[in-house]
Image 1: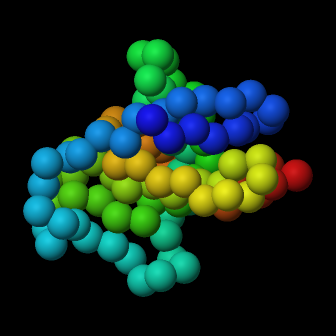
Image 2: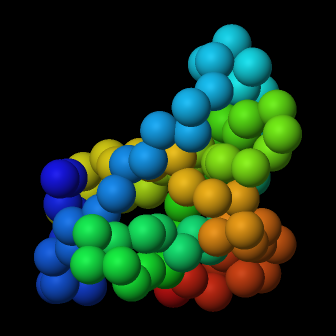
Image 3: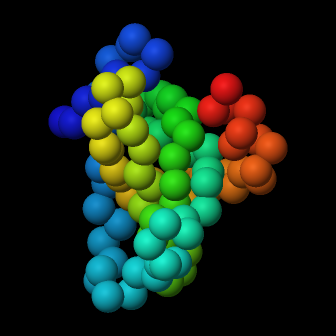
Length: 98
């Protein structure tokens, strides 16, 4: 299972396959991805919140493809249930960047 480190803690996370044809996935223009707070499913059955971008979503939309960077600025990604994703407005995102 893939792992990443956030705030000094290492997490093992899931990369579920939404079981959809990738040609059904939708996306905005590169760099214009919505900023989100994603409750990322972990291998132990819990979740951890990550600030991410929603790069793609399926046609239904039951899954969202999110991407984020860990403490070392290494990129990570996963398809996660759409119910685990909350869109953020600029002030909410900017507060996290401080």
